[in-house]
Structures are given as C-alpha cells and as structure tokens.
Amino acid sequence: MAIYHLSAQLIKRSDGRNAVAAAAYRSGDQLTDEITGEVKDYRLKDGVVHSQIYLPKGAPAAFADRGTLWNAVEQKENRKDAQLARELNVALPNELTRSQQIELLDGFINEQFVELGMIADTNIHVAHEGKHQNDHAHIQLTLREVAEDGFGRKNRDWNKKELVEQWRQAWENHVNQALENAGIDDRIDHRSHKDRELDTEPTIHLGPTANELESKGVRTERGDINRDIEARNNVIELAKTQERIRELKEEKRQRDDKALDDAYVGSIEGVSGRPGKFAAESAKFTKTVDLAFEKHGNVYVWRSLQAKGKTVPAFIEHKDKITAHTRNKTALKAMAQASMEKFGQRFRATGSEEFRRELWLQGSMIGADVTGFDPTDEDIRLLRDQIDEHEKRYGRKPKLSDDIKALVMPEEDLFEQYETPLMEKRNKAVSLKEKANKDKETAEKSRMRLIERRDQLNQRAEGLMNAGRKKDFADLLEEARREVIPDDELQALDELEARIKDQEEKQFVLFRGRHEKQLEKMRSELRSERTRLIDDYREDVQKTIEHIRHAPSPEASQLLDQAKQLQRQIDKQLETEKQLDEKILKAAKAIELIDEELAKQDIKYG
Image (cartoon, rainbow, N blue to C red; front, side, top):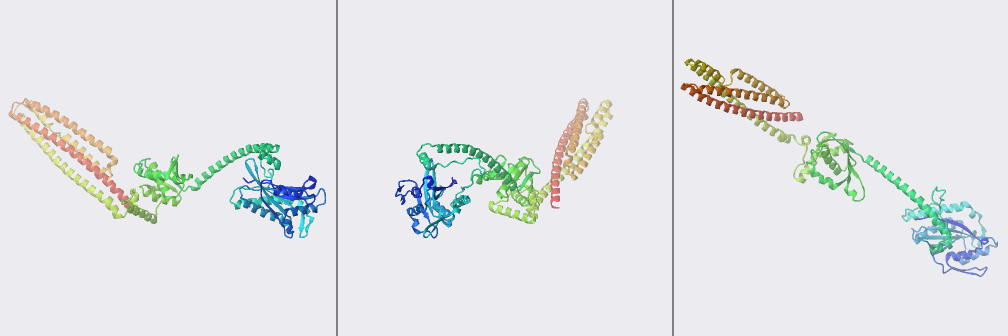
C-alpha cells in the first residue's frame, strides 16, 4: 500500500555535520574532504540502488562530479554555523517498478528544484522494516544560486515555509499521477492526520540506527512506539471497517431495491379460473422454466447470470400477482406459464403497453387468455406469423384458447371447425326427437286400444250380470271397470302430461337447463302417479281374478284368461312408455346444449 512521506532538514555545521560526508553516505561512495583531507568511504553500505545529480542551466559541468560539487559547497562557506545543504527524504511507492520510481523522481526534481536553480544529488535506497520493504529517496539540495563560475549568494526565498508546503503538495500530485499511469488504484495524501480528520495516529520516523537494529530483530524504543501506535490504529481501523461493511450492505440493499423498482415493467393478476386448473397442461413448459431460471423463495433469477455470481431477478411471485422486472421474451413466456398455474388460463396484464403486448403474444402461444391489452391489426398479424412459424418448425399449430382462435383464424376455418359439427349434431338430435315422437304416437294408439278393450270387458261383464248371479257379477263389473286405468285418472294423467309437455316447450325456448330441477320434479311426480295407478290396477285385477275363479260358467274362465293376457299387455306397454320417455329426455337435453352453443356462436360472430 502506497504511503505518504516527505521530510525536510538542513545540514548545518553547528550540528557537527559535513556536506561531503553526508553525500558520501547517501550515495554509498568514497569521497575526500579537501579541507581536512579526511576520506569518507561508504562503499560497503548496502541498499543504494540508484544515484544521480541534476544540474540547472548555467551550472558548471564539473559539478556533475559528486566530490567536486560538495567540496565546492564546503569551501564556499566560512561560518562555523553555516547552513551547508538541505536534505529531503521521500517515500517511494513499492508498487512502482524501479524505472517508474526513477521517472517519478525526474519529474518532481526538475519541476520543483532544478527549475528554481538548485542542484539536486539524488540517491534511491531500499531498506526493510520488519516484513515491509521501504523504498525511499534522499535528495540533497544546494542553498546558493549557481553560475558558470561557481556558487553565488544564498537564495533566502528557498527557506520559506510556504515552499516546503508546496513541495509536499507537488510530491502528492506526482506520486498519484504515477500510480494512475501504472493502473494502480492506491492514492496518497500529503495532509496530516489532524487536517484529514483521521482517528488514527501517525507513526514516528525510525531513523537509520533504529531501522538497522529493527531489521536485525532487535527491538528499539522508537520501534515499540510505532508498534503501540499501529496496534491502536488497527483497533480503530477494524471498527471503521466493520462500520463501512454495514454501510456497504445497506447501500447494496437500497441499490437492489431501487434496481427492482427501476426494472419493474408490469405485473399479472388473476381474473377467473381456479389456481392450478391448467397445471397439467402447462407441465410440459415447467422443464423450460427450470432450465432458464432458478427460484429463490418467490424470486425467479436467471441461471446463466447466477452461474457468473450475479443474482438478477426476472420476475417475482407474490400472493395475488406476479411482477416482471425484464422485457425478455423467454422470461415473459415463463411468467405466463407460471401465471397459468397460479391463476388459471385467464389473467390480466398491467404495466407499460410494450410489456402488455409482448406478454399477450407470448401467453397466446401457450394457450393463455391474456386480458388488459387490446391488440391492433398489426399485433394480430404478428401473432399469426408466430403461429405459422411454430407450425413450420414443429409440424403442428400451438394450442390456442378459443378467444385467440376466434381472433386469428379465418372465418371459413372457424365455420368448418365449429358450425359444421354443431349443425350435424343438432340435425342428428332433431332426427332422434322426431323418431321418439313417432314412437310416442304409437304408444298413444296402443293405449287407446287398451281403453277400448276395457270398454269391451265392461260390456261382457254386464252381460254376465244379466244372465244371473247379479251380486257376484255386480262386483265383477266394478272390478272389471278398474281393470284398466279409470277415465277420470286417465284424464288427470293426460292433463299432467300436457302440462309437462307445455313446460318442456317453454324450457326449450329459454334453454331449459335453468329449470331442469323443476322439470325433473314434474317427471318424478308423473312416474309416482303412474306407479300408484299401476299398483291400484294390479290389486283390482287380482281381486277380479279371484272372483272369476269362483264363477261356474265357462265364460268366466275365458274372461280370466283374457284378463291375464290384458295384464301382460299393459305391463309391456308401460315398459315401452318408460323407455320412450328416457329417449325423449336425452334428445331434449342434447338439443338444448347444441342450441346454447349456437347461441354463443351467434353472439360471438354477430
């Protein structure tokens, strides 16, 4: 991590320092002090990786030699407390290569020092502080103006504090620009912790002695101070990091919520139909949905993006609706499939017109009936093109709802598909009804013949009575009259059947399905009435048979046989009438259903 460090100090004789010795030490070179004759030899010093002297315009070329330069500085100063040179120590970003570090120093030194007329003797050092590498540079600057004939007067403007602050700001700018050029995100700041309102404490500078001891594993006082500061700073940074993590999570949640709101394009709500009613029909689409989407709770996300670590919702299933967050056709088709399983075949789309149009197109192709959108002629044409494309691709037309069929199919195809089969069914049902009516007429004629037979039986009974045994034959006459259904009961039965027939005609006109229960009740009453009459009749016939058995005349025996035969005929006729009634009822219901379908078609196609 790049750090900021720039410190400045004066090399003064009052501190017992020497410009030649300082230059020899910083450069790891051997120099001779020409005034004292002392040799300063630091060639065994490790860590010096680059040295360079920068000369301003007009400076003597001889000053490019380090010994010549700094001996000239020493010889120019006469005071025992003279200020000999200024030294800057700057930290170099370890993230930069050596050539990038040298390029950074070139730009900074030429701009801030050489252009002002200073000579800069620069040395790059590489040191290790514990586990960290400390790349830094020492810049030793002259304090006097220089000309071709050597040094002149001292420039007091170079000692102003404002200039040092300028150097600090300039070093920040040059380092940050070098980091940006190298594609590194780290940045430095020349301001103090206090000016930057930081909670952490700045560490202190170790210095060469403490740094060397620390590198050898020897703890120093300055090193312990820095370790204590770093421990306190770590606690502060940990708390700040945790707080920042919470802030980032909250920001992400807000961004996700906003993204969902921004991505909202429409929703689907149920209209009619039981949930799950079309689940079986749409089950073949479930595999497509599962392949394209992964369900997280009630949220359907793209599997392709999920595999890349991105959770992007396509649509969300709520309790009473499904909301869409994309206009992708695959997603809208899957959304329509989920809606069919949740709401049934018919559901309503809300949202932008583009969303409703695309949902109508995709839903129509899978048999859904999407309301909330009024298709134009162009939309219908697009749907027909999709249907034709599906038929070419799969060899069959897609399953469409009745409303969509009526909308996109040609009129002649609709007539062939719906009207022709319905008319054939109706004609067949009418034919069955006519046959049933004929059978009923035949049954009526048979009933009249039975009534006529009853009258003949009565006449014969009266003849027997005139021949004698009036009391027995008076009873026989009464029983014989009750052998068949009496006139008043026949009349009541006829009236009841007439009322039923009249009611059936009214129900047929008004689609008698609404009065089916009442009709069934009346038929039940008729059957009960017939059953009661038949039971009474059979009881009377049995009594008649008993009377005739005790009659001595041959005519009575013959009458007994005729009564038995008549009973069998009546039983057979009643069974025939029952079967005819069932046929008539089935035919009437079939005609009623067909007429209802025809009525719907009349309403739909005008």
